Image (cartoon, rainbow, N blue to C red; front, side, top):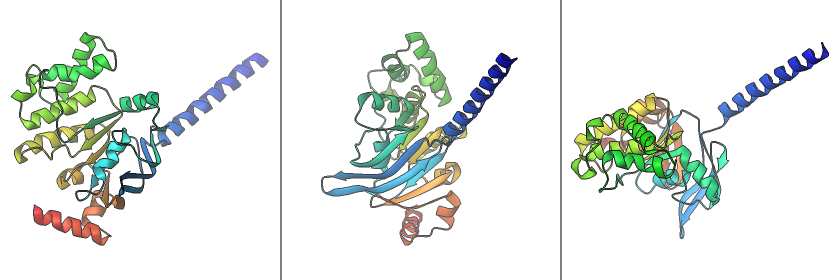
Length: 272
């Protein structure tokens, strides 16, 4: 009888710990920035930036050129090195430790302004590359995974073509599929439509909207206001290396508080 009581108590304790662990995991930010600063020589590019991004949250960062927004997201996977403050991804602090860096980069995918595809490899081969060399997957498994994401970005008919045979919008969708093949928890987008002709922007944004609808954690630097309104849970406005204002799309676009954000929005509307 005592043994049964002990067993029940142990099981109850394990269940309690499991629930507590689930609660802790749910409360851990996907990305945490704590007073992050960066300099390029004497130029202070990021100034004590603090921001948390929850798992599954979709954050759009806006701001004028030179505001530090691209530098900020490039710091999240150590493409740029911050000099002060802390950056944590899934509760793991980003440091110079190579093992930590590899761990974090497996969790964080990134899509750039330029497509950065290997011109001598087909779409399928570009998407298989990281799976076979970084994740050590078999060629068969890597090919199946690559085709899954090529289909997800809706260009399966392009799988055996080379990048030079594709439009800019198609190449950017390949870049998104390639990043997804690492099966990241978080996706970073650095102005992914800025290098595209206007008629190609829509197809890339539709692909990103599909990702957002699937629950992917996303941080996106963009000037596409319509995309921000439709997709973002939160919009962050930066200027001169600082976060000036943050809020829901309705709050930021319809009820801006700061004079600088009001000025920025007026300029964007006039430019459109």
